[in-house]
Amino acid sequence: MERIKLTPLFDGLQAMLKKENYKPKLNKAYQEDYKHAKDFLLSYRGSVDTFNSYRRDIERFLQWCFFKANKTVKQIKRAEFEAFLAFCQNPPVSWIATTVEDRFFEKNGEKIPNIKWRPFVVKISKTETKSGIEPNKKDYELSEKAFRALFAILGSFYNYLIQEEYTLINPTLLVAKK
Image 1: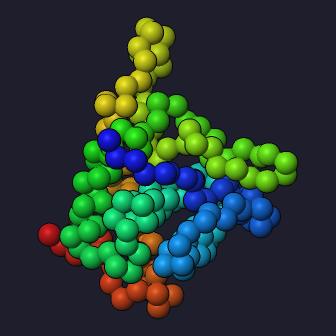
Image 2 (image 1 turned 30 degrees about the horizontal axis):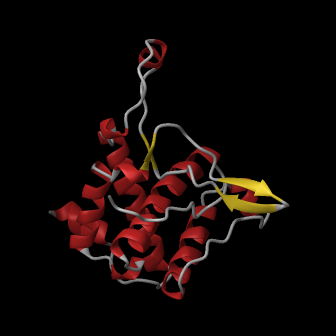
Image 3 (image 1 turned 90 degrees about the horizontal axis):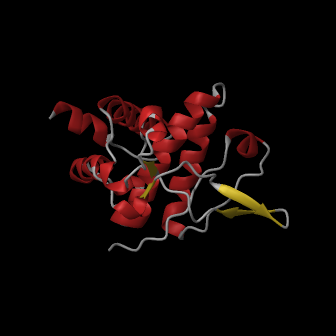
């Protein structure tokens, strides 16, 4: 079984705006990626729902880059991006939760990452819940709509990084042409 210590990277919008954002302990190679991702996310502060969607997918991507692929955002090419997409369609069970968990809790005025938080959550219908059916991590499935949103969000993220002169390529364009 794969043992990767997952930790949320980004706090909620209000905490980020108030500079109360949790700052993850990342190695130096990933700190610039994190800073650019944070700035990108804050550019969507006009809508909490949009911010949350973008945070979810950017965070999944950075989690995969940093903790699974051991690569920076700049190092991601077409093949790696395709591997990430395949990963999202079938993430390891250790990356999946059966309930939505808070990202952080406060202890002595300090934000502490919630060890129960996971980047992916398996969901079941209300009818199934009322029938006593429990969610099963092995039943996780990324919907077509969620897949298209993930692809679009990461395409937008890479366009932002190009405009910021942080990277030269957008791997989503290379995959889309395929």
